[in-house]
Length: 285
Figure 1 (spheres, rainbow, N blue to C red):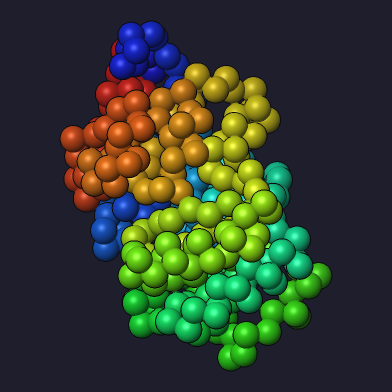
Figure 2 (figure 1 turned 90 degrees about the vertical axis):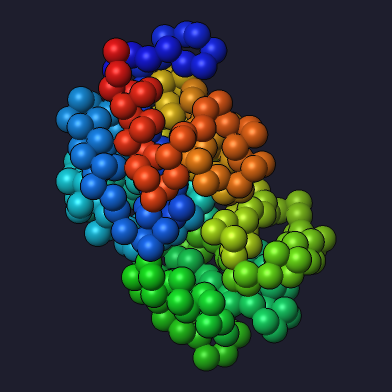
């Protein structure tokens, strides 16, 4: 498991943290055979393969099953942009970094004033959606994400529940930034905003992100920062790409992410980008 990094130093990679949509998964949401084979090989060599997703963990259990990692002891997953870290076996919660209810309520109420967006509220085991747009419905269906629809914009029934994050959907990029600016003007000292999949505006508690969660998990597993790799394609992946020992962008990554990554694959997510990284940086002597 030795490879010369782009800086010329030998590194043993013990954790691979990977985004899912547009990174590990094909554009249609499926998992490619090249990636499946490479990840299984890495796991057999003792590498932790950790999905690090903005999604809820239940929505990618089928992917873990295909990789032979579902419900496995000593394997881990990160969800909600770093708001939850779990062991795969029994979906055991290792750590949560969610939003206080009053803050989640404020962000939700601010964002829903934009009447052309879909509003999501993520709990550990449930997703609630208010005013779902057709574009959001199509995307969620392609990922087979289960959720409950809210018929009214009232989330007071969640006040005693742990809320992981609040997000909004629109494919209109200008509208995304308008909404982000509006919410951050009101709650910018308490939340961070990221963008994903060309459609989602995501709000987590301040300081909570994929990079923070990766380092938190690495510390729990006694893995050094330099022994971690993070792979992504979009803005919400930047914190883990910058935090990891090797930050990698897939060929289809947005330019801002590709620019800040240590390495970029020649393969896109549809062409086995993860397999390329594993064979070039993790399993290659």
